[in-house]
Image (cartoon, rainbow over all chains, first blue to last red; front, side):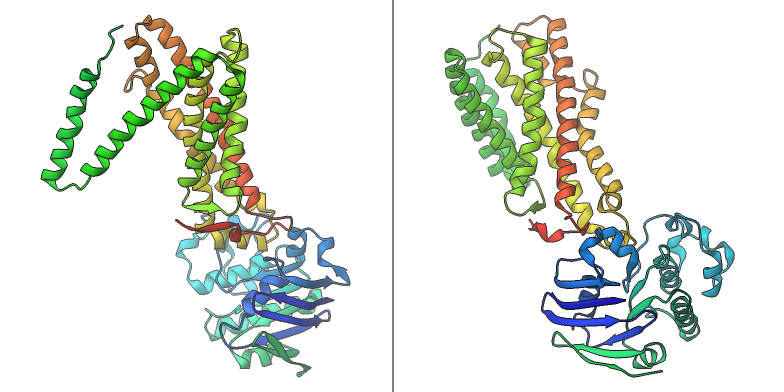
Length: 201
Length: 264
């Protein structure tokens, strides 16, 4: 479904990773190991060497924007540029999904600067699904959330995977979380991915 | 026309000395700079006077072209010097210079051939001052526009990248920044046109009147110059900001801040 072969970017690699449809791979590792940079390579946000494939189609067959609509990266820090939340959803606010993440129906009218970092992070999760990506790259998706909202966010992502058979790469500092949501676990250290084995389920 | 003697200029120069003395007294620490700048004015303009006299006498197209290229290169250098983030490599000099070359040269040509209509069309008394004025103002617009573009892109790096991650094209993700940058490059000339003759008496017109030209003739020339400058600044800034924005991305629609040098 999604595979990365011999990826090198900055001090990382060469490394490979491959995911089947509906599979979630967790990546842990010390901070500064380059987990976020690796994700930037997967989303083609920075020059890198190596090959990316989506269902056996190499990434250069897609334009950059096309690729990123299918392989969507959600960075740890969410960014907003319009006044209200709803304006960031040009094709209409996904009220049903918003409810699943614990938002009230009028959240689209809320002013961005009045939202907490946790609320913004949950909105970013809604936003990254706009183009119904086939691969989700999540960088600390629940870092700013309390326990209840973390659980809601995890269930939300798992439900999306279930429904669309999307593959997910999930970076987290919380080993408990990775064990809860991932099928495979690996560790990025000294520029290498280790422990790529089927672990759970 | 009243001819100025060196003594007249020396008399005016006293003002600079008085200001330098004040700076010393008030510890403004600007006296030295002021003196150096005044000295530079005298030297540079005298030199220009000699060169212009030489060129005006010869009316040699090759020589005029050489002078025009020298002016262009100087302006290009100045645009680069005014950037807080410069494009690395040849682009730092190239983007601003090619934008000025396109806009200023074309507009000067247009003015010389279609409007002034002197024979030969490159008559240096018209060509050099026209080019100089258009180049000088286009340079300001381009320098401001490019500086605004690179600075804002640096500041908004995270927002631009988020927009890219959501599948937007680079041109879409920076469209508002590009628009603002072009606008800010055009504001000086718009302001100059709005207050011309009310708050400020344009220098060129004042010069012509002092030199004995009838006021209405001077006014007509000033209007012409304003329009040419506005055209040059507009085309030049749009081209420079457009090219700069393009250079900040690549064929994969990524943000390429690595193509900018360190802040200076």
